[in-house]
Image (cartoon, rainbow over all chains, first blue to last red; front, side, top):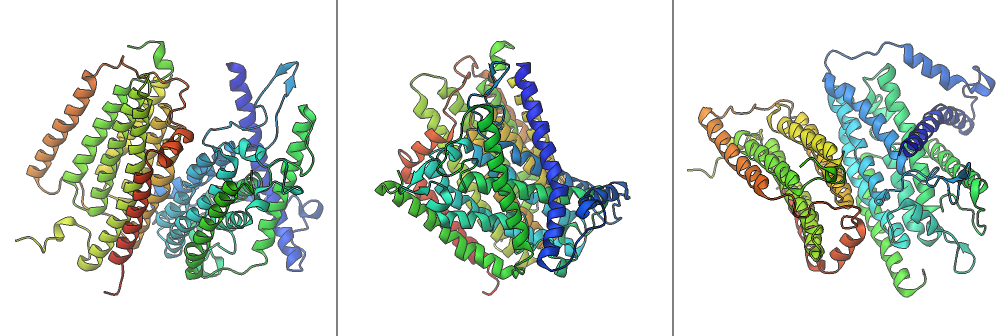
Length: 350
Length: 116
Length: 165
């Protein structure tokens, strides 16, 4: 009993620690990456290649005054960043990130040591928790008592409802192919080959669903080209205009943690999770380490994709965003799971 | 009553009692509030108390051998109640927006032109 | 242990429900309702209905209440009337009705014998599989019909909220 509790505790600390550590690294990648794309230098003064810049920024944010403006609704104003951070951190819990078959520690099997709790409603858990993230934006927008923040909040609520539908429907195909809501089962269902030579990744079987999910993930993380909620050139900083110090840092961190979670979900749902095409992983600790490495590599690629797209594409107009969500992505998502259904029924996908 | 079984699960009557309390609070809201949004939220509380009652009895029947289908029916009802609640929310909010446009307020006492 | 968690969830649900009904700010009403729905999802999870717990959070907290927030922000409702401002008579009648009805249900629940059934351990009855089978099997007609109802509701909502009549 207490061993289980200890294992869960260690897992939680490790996952949360890694997640929090990715934030400064991602900030650095983002700033250096944008500099690379825009042909400038980017931060290069603090530490080697500016690597310590985000840490210095974090310290700066920590020691600044936590300003709560006079006109705000104090409860909502403080609640919003808290919700953002809690939701972002609790999302990742259900994501499996490595294989853990036959692991032993001092000749005692420790099943489920690496893979996070394998909930029997895995995907639904993630959607349920992710659906709470919008409250942080809406409440920040409303509680700030600022017209730009309010506009950001209203945009965020409309955007979330429109994109959540397409996102959920695009995952229906994955659930059908896996025959389960367990995320580990979704990963194992993508092992082997399809049509003789293609890796059996969901992205290759149902590319439409994969693309819709990735696009919706951009909308979900409020990043360009869908960053209407904070659109700096129109709304100052959108919903977090009035925030400073640690409250701002909470929003900032939750944004990057969301990005990591989205990249991990794209990997798990559509790109075979920790599996390497055509190669089956060895068991034991080596397999666990190798699968963790493969998973991390895939996640890093999608994180870079997030940065890449952000500094390449311009922002959508709000009506274009809504039209894309409702009129294009939603029907295409339906088409995608129709295709999966037909493929499963006709035996192309067995 | 406080025996080892409580470590595993709770009696279905507790769920039923919770459902009753929530129903009462929901009725209170509908009877005593006058702005349409809060009345609507109270309706949602009452709908949820209904789902809890179904859940309580589904739980009850799930433990009786041979009644599993009945337990499943209870959960089906919860599922459909949630779906209908979504439809109801869409129509209700559209109504309030129309009412607000017409009267400049969502106080339900102001929507009285059909009264004699 | 489970009983303790259940009682906590129930207490949270009741407190938030009261706040949702009596608070003067519509935003706080909606927020309290989010708390209540989360607590009820917790109750569902405790009694083994995992699937419904997830659906409860996704549909209610994730969609319906976001819609409410959207409407409140659109109508800019910062402060509305408090409870019981419709007169003493209304307040009195309301309280009597509530105490009567709520008391009746709680009383009835207390009279039921909790020994029959009630202990569902490790049951699979609340996971996605049996629910999915039932939805696409014995309840297929209702399932399809709900989609018609939802479509009708969307059309009705669009028609009602349309600006140009």
